[in-house]
Image 1 (tube, one colour):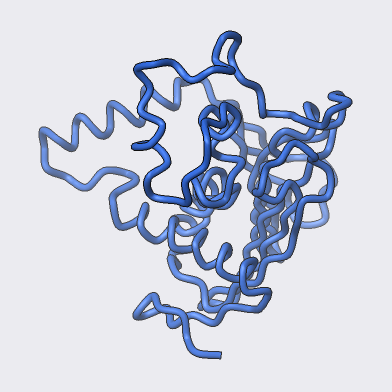
Image 2 (cartoon, rainbow, N blue to C red):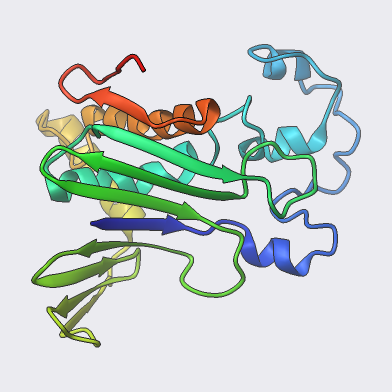
Length: 231
């Protein structure tokens, strides 16, 4: 079992009486600037009048983005794919909804995804508007040990252990490492650590999850062809 989570906006939602965490409009932008082409911005979806929250917080609107799955889950599921050497799930089912926010957003603030993969393992992703607790992370849960990863460190827990036997802190700049790897691969023509194929399959995993949420059913996938199978 691999658990992933990225609890986004929970503290802001819990302390704001209007429950509008992550939904702010910069001062002075309530009125559309004359040089901002709102029609071009909104063209791919149904037209609506100038809406500052939807422009500055597009991640909160499902017709302007893929929600929390394409925003946060993709950053974790690619690691799962790399570590487990499996890149396409066999099934995905997602449940969630708007249970806390009342600011007009359409992206669920509470979400739980469960996917099964060839090779006999499952992967979950959770996003909840909780205040406190670890905001994000990945846990690889095995019969002989447990590995926990976030963007600051990794921890190894031996079988039966209640405290980590090893903690390795991250002492480098992860953004600089990514950029350096990409530029080096541009010169050498080698495949970068996170190439376009990994990106496509991570995005697909998120799209499968959104489809499951939208259609309120478990999605069955052909891992070889990366297509959704008929019901």
